[in-house]
Length: 326
Ligand code: XMP
Image (cartoon, rainbow, N blue to C red; front, top):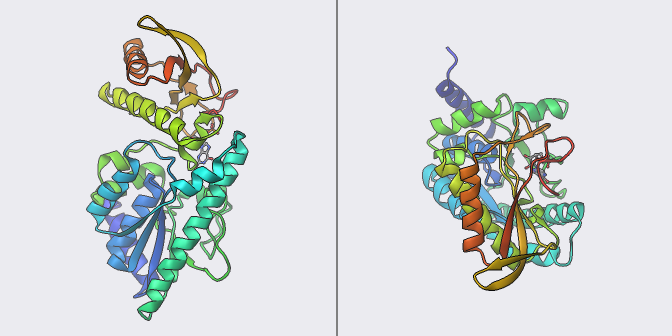
């Protein structure tokens, strides 16, 4: 019979057959797919897999630590965390246009990952080996969408990782190619990955960089990160994670409005809550969250974050609004 533990055993056997006694590299994004793909390969080839996680400084509170703790601790994988936040922030300085931000973040990501990959290959070569394989968390819907071609030397370009230079060519290992998202989550559970990683809601590759409407700065990221953490905490506490597809929290950094706190007039920034329900992110509706939960989020954000004096709720479906604001 077809069960998830069969899927794990079968994939592990296949990966061993494909990679043999050679080495592989995997870029972790912080998301479910790359983590489960890496965990499967780790199960198959152990420390001949090296994982690279590029910290672009645009993640939510605690997420980078979660990769280090949850992922590395449960899988025992060889993980290299590259802190590149300075590089991303300086590349983003002065930029407000959403597509321009995406381009910059994508470009810097490739630069940092290329350098990390080059280092990993050099280390392997110093020990008389090489790195021949690149692990990717391609799912069945991605395969269908991109025409079903079989995995060869390039990193898929429609996501956040572009091509690698010619002297860094790899064969692809794509152990999730036959699976749908819910099956990937189940495989992750089978492999012992914690629920908070396996159940993670979608989060865009460019991270909080496209949730600040306006220029991205360290101070603004800090404000948004705190507001987002409060919203996530309250939604989880109200057991609403399963009801929503995702809930972007957005900082309108170039907008100010007048408020009052104590005896004083304030002139602060609005935070937008964008809870959506969806099947596949192609269309979405705004989620009718309970008023008391919205009230708690609003009160806490305005009490705890001095830069924010107003919380607004986005009640637009997709279309016409996209899920993200940028
Ligand atoms: P939109 O805003 O287009 O979002 O309705 C649809 C889904 O895609 C995610 N999203 C992105 N994911 N890189 C990503 O990896 C991106 O640049 C990006 N933009 C949007 C969004 O979070 C939602 O799940």
